[in-house]
Length: 323
Ligand code: FO1
Image (cartoon, rainbow, N blue to C red; front, side):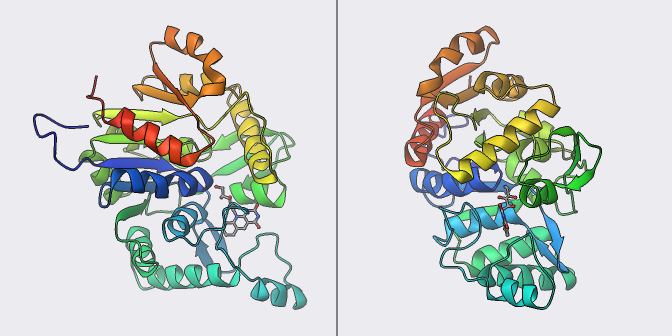
């Protein structure tokens, strides 16, 4: 991607993302783009107060992955984790449904101390990223103010996103989703203002991307970026083969249904049509391309289940001039 004639200038790419999709894609995208080119804007709708500490699961997953410390098999938290504090709390009668590991706990203690000392969430996130050794990618929270997503279940309960997703396994049907509309973070908006391309990552279109796009100022900032690409979070032709993928797929299906949207790449592409100029979907789902073309959205098919290939496909799409 190049603005004007300055084709050799370092391109700047912003990735909007949730936890799992971002943790899988961000390190590979960094590798294909090169150092200093990628900014990740992480969803804050999943954030929560847990035992008095601020926990930011999506930013943390991305940072742990960029630092080579993410537990890929579990899909969250740190590798080589222990759960001694959780178990000791349980022995004291404080049984936890949200499992925070001992090393992960250190991140929440540090971030919470910085917030208590008056730092913004953006500043606290930068401090944690640098402490983890991440200097070649900028990781930003989508907002500095709390913007937690609430889920209203079909039986009328209003739950924090994590209560629905983790405590109840995303099992209850969803009546509606309440996304916060607080102002987007200033650093996040500034990164979009100078970006050559923005990627809407393969994350939940409601709870992750929807929550980011609901923040005041973000949608307009995305619309002004010269290249705008969305990646399908759904590979319809290949059923999820592990527990992590199934949990995410069930959450997506439930949340999309609450918004009257089908759980297919084409239905998700239509949600992003008008905002992005290109939709990347899996080769196995090419039967969807015909219907998408009718909506005037350029589509590209690649192997979305292999993150390195996905990062390369994105980089090659980003190398095309804005249209
Ligand atoms: N996900 C779970 O399914 N169970 C957990 O106990 C759990 C704990 C947890 C602790 C810290 C953290 O950063 C993430 C954690 N997650 C857990 C993942 C998280 O709830 C979701 O994966 C994301 O919010 C969805 O993007």
